[in-house]
Length: 124
Image 1: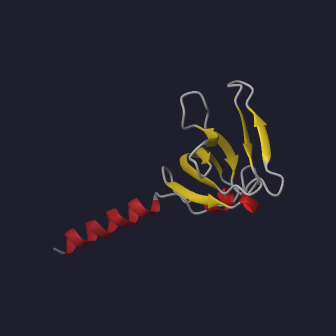
Image 2: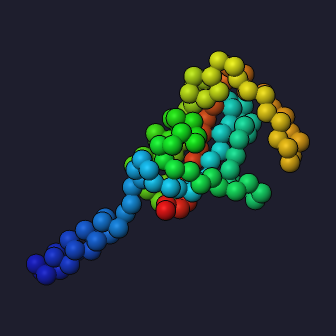
């Protein structure tokens, strides 16, 4: 019985030690979708067939700060959903965006709260 317990402990330690948690400075490929309160897609990468996932360096301010900070500690294939208040998204000015390929335009009002879903799909 004690050999069985020892094997279980070794397997658990091995499995846990192979997990990689993201830290500042890691490069990561993520899928990301940002929607407004009406569930209208504001930005999307990697969730549709056309859009490519984003390759970013964690802590390098390549995405909104709340998303960047939320990536720290995440694991491969982990998904998170967060709320982006206006001051953590497009600020006091909002944004008017015209997408070149789809020729879609949208406006994010300064007071819009957004919702982000993102998933780690590869860690470098």
